[in-house]
Image (cartoon, rainbow, N blue to C red; front, side, top):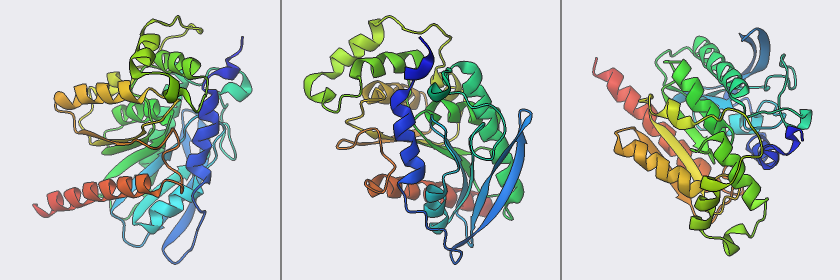
Amino acid sequence: MKFRLLILFYCFSSRLFAQTLPDSTSQSAFTIESIKFNSAGITLEGEIFKPKHAHAAIVLVHGSGQEMRMTGMASFLAKNGIAVLTYDKRGVGKSGGVYAGPEAGTNNIDSANLNLLALDASAASNILLAHLTDKNLPTGLMGFSQAGWIIPLAAKKNSQISFMVIFSGPVVTTLEQLRFQFYTQGQSTFWETHTEAEAREHISNDPDRYQFAGTDPRDALSTLSIPGLWIFGGKDIQIPVGLSIERLNVLKAKGKPYHYQLFPALGHNTSSNKSPETLHYALRWIKTIGEANKKSLNKY
């Protein structure tokens, strides 16, 4: 069997991160600059959104699926004082390279592909910093779903990345993720008929349907010291939220500056205009990073 089923639900929901926000690209609040940059032997294309007065800077990292640049989210952030770089995913839109994913019958969550996408996010961060007038702005990564594996890898590769924001990102291995996803089968009523204990038991003991080396985000997260925010939905049927929160708590107990916020009524899609409270929560958190950075610079 090909990997057509692999992260099938991610391919639907991760697109929401790019498309459900209003694509308001008013030039009054910010400017838009088209850019090209190189990563791992290919050229990626995207845009930089520059507000007049920026609190922080962010590179938007894709979830799974054939994702193009996320202009809706970039516009929202730029109107709220965040400089943003968004680009077409490798092998999609105007970007070069080869896309890996279920639509192409290939494995998009093997370690080689995740590390390649992390290199792209790291290269994008360097380009964004190079185009900013204020080189002291805190620069972070924001992404959805599958980006929960990619962002920690990119942050580990690039010391200039100073914070992370992850919507509905797993803090479990890729193989554990698949076990959970096959168990829920996309059933919207899953949590009405199953318990957290049953889900944990399945994740621990279900035989893997695919054989490849799994990626554990904790390998990177345990080495990082930058602030991170995870936004979770309590009714998520695509990532095991309870287990992810438990593992974040272990990292927090070891002194890692990680924070999470659970929205009990939401599912996997935690970043659309149907749930503005999550976006505004993340925005407030990002601005606290900017304020802390400003205070730190003022000491010198």
